[in-house]
Length: 197
Image 1 (tube, rainbow, N blue to C red):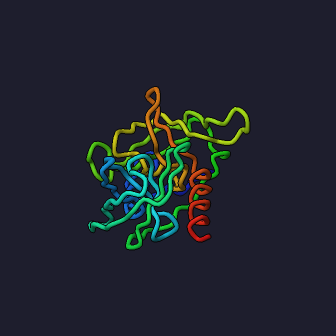
Image 2 (cartoon, rainbow, N blue to C red; image 1 turned 90 degrees about the horizontal axis):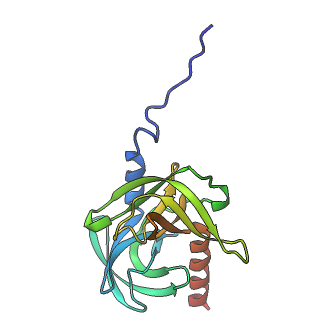
Image 3 (tube, rainbow, N blue to C red; image 1 turned 60 degrees about the horizontal axis):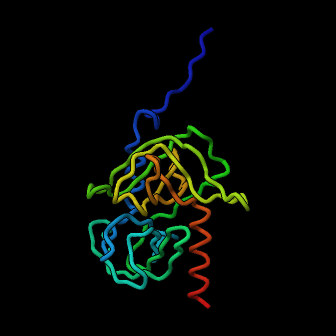
């Protein structure tokens, strides 16, 4: 007796174009006096998370879905290289967050952004490790064997299901480094609570 298994129309190993399409509407391009980079629409509308590509309390423009929007930076976490932008006219889908504690070395990860001025580019690599605080054990950075370049900063690092693993930040020793999604969520929560107070 022969057993057959259904084969999906495509797998992430052979075709990640659906992932690039899904990320396109959630990722913006940022232009500011500090330079340029990518940003992630956070919470569906009105907020964008990015990294070091904006100045404190500075005005900037955001390119999203073929339109240019005015925006302003409203909060920073320099210890984590994060910035929050108020962009009331920008909207996008809400990311599902991935707990970095569930990541395993060798797992495929994908970085999306605008490297070297190439818009909406997707890069793939494998998880190297999650770097934790030596004192508290809390996750601080995600290191992946993934090719990043200027313009990827502030863009998403996602898993093969499109869940947000982190926000791309820098390159260290040839490895792409990202801020864990849980750290980003905590930063946005603190910043928005302070503004509401």
